Image 1 (cartoon, helix red, strand yellow):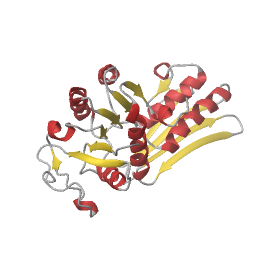
Image 2 (cartoon, helix red, strand yellow):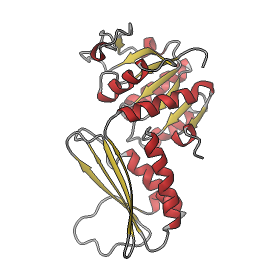
Image 3 (cartoon, helix red, strand yellow):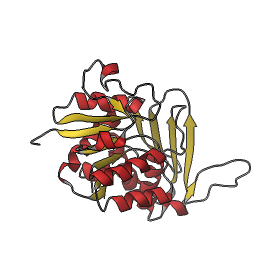
Image 4 (cartoon, rainbow, N blue to C red):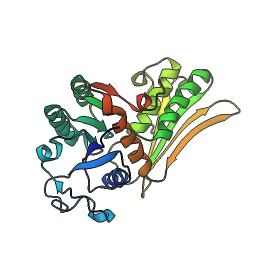
Length: 269
């Protein structure tokens, strides 16, 4: 890479924002170009590296136009409504996007797909290399264990997470459904309460836990008669998501447009 990629971090004063900033500062192939935060944030106007002990000469701002001008890639782990605003601005300035936000509606996902005709986007509910591998393993396992095994997806996150099931859990469910030759919408069970009757074969169940400061735990269970196969990923630090997201940014360096995910970034197709 001849010149460092100019990176803009959205939500720069949040937990994920700090992890992304630290990863950018530690990588010679990347340079911080802009740092965005919400309007009225107490961090506005401060050096983006201040809390990390780094002088970056980049001030945290709520001006999207200021942050994106002449940038290469925006990395966004915020909220769906904010992402839609950034998406429009990235198209305006021809800035590529890494979208790790979850909880989008079908309409918002369609807007992302449409935008990818004009700019390059990596859109994935989880940027972890380990989770990306897990998705592949789950699909392969479901293809093999397609008869006589019940599939359940369990996830736990910190108390501040606002969407459920997590985007990663849904992506794992989609992988399992694909392995079974189905669509997740046709076989997902998201809640159980009261007298539900016996479990129906071919369904994929979800269980959601919230509490404390859990970064992200995901397990897919294949429960058969006399045995159980469990595939698990546990994240103990947001650094793993930051490293994956910035690996994705480098992947987009020579891309003009198109919608990609971490399977593409890691060449697992």
